[in-house]
Amino acid sequence: MSLMSLIAALPKTELHLHIEGSLEPELMMALATKHNVSLPYTTVEEVAAAYQFDSLQSFLDLYYLGASVLRDEEDFYCLMRDYLQRSHAQGVVHCEIMFDPQTHTERGIGYDVFMPGFCRAIEEAKQNGGPSVLLILSFLRHLTEQEAIQTLQDAKPYLDRITAVGLDSSEKGNPPEKFARVFEQAGQHGLLKVAHAGEEGPASYIWSALNTLQVDRIDHGVRCLEDPELVEHLVQHQIPLTVCPLSNVKLCVYEKMEQHPLRDMLAKGLNVTVNADDPSYFGGYLLENYQALVTSLALTREEALTLIRNGFRASFLAPEQKQYWLDKIEQMADAHP
Ligand SMILES: Nc1ncnc2[nH]cnc12
Ligand SMILES: [Zn+2]
Image (cartoon, rainbow, N blue to C red):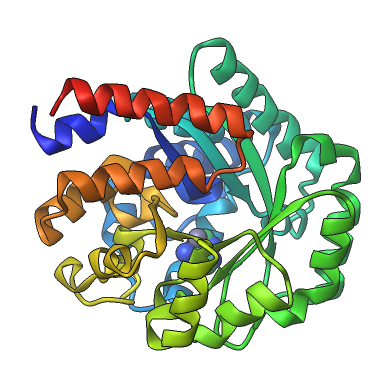
């Protein structure tokens, strides 16, 4: 069995996935027609051709534009259904999915529209043997903390469906400490915490996410490598980093996949996981990320197994569920030496 066939067959997690970033050009065009939304593209090929980014911001501009076609409950249902079908086909058994309420509420589309759509698709996946799903409510960091506090308030009727809060969007100039109070409030509601940090922003933002926001995981975190003391801290406390290789290359964090430090990070003992981020914008879902690591970095079988195990260890699953999947991985790895 080839390494890629083994990776494909093993149960896997997805811990860093923006549902709005899984909007495929086909669905975007269909919804633009349905709602009479005008986009600067007329064909799926034109959409794909526009996905050339030179920074996080250049991507975010198109990501928010794309999300503007999502209008009614059925649209959000289709978005989640399509993502869960694709990830199921790739052997993903558990997903922790971010959604950006403010991308929708700013357009007058409320929780009462997107939450029922998401939840219907999640229930359906559960009935059909698809992945289990936990939801992460992510605040847009280019907006104010007061707006994030309002967003958390508005989520109150839905908190039983939400596991954690997150922090995404334009990183530079919007440090984690800007959101100290809203993360504290989220903690008081019993929510877990993650934050994008050290993607484009400096290593100091990772310290701030840990010390000020008290996050359970860091999304991206690759720039920790610029601060040896931080690396030591992350290794010592085994803080999970949800790394997204295709995203990092597409957004020019690294020029080429061959330059990606993922194997060095593993060698240092960092608790690294592999994830897709915004698969329809970055050229692939979870397996395409693994494929890139195997092809461009010569990822080994042991490293691949470590990454896959780390995904379950870093997840918000209950300990017995983690153990169930970790045992399955060992059985399957033993059966295919
Ligand atoms: N990779 C990313 N970084 C920051 N914000 C995002 N929103 C969606 N994808 C993102
Ligand atoms: Zn992200």
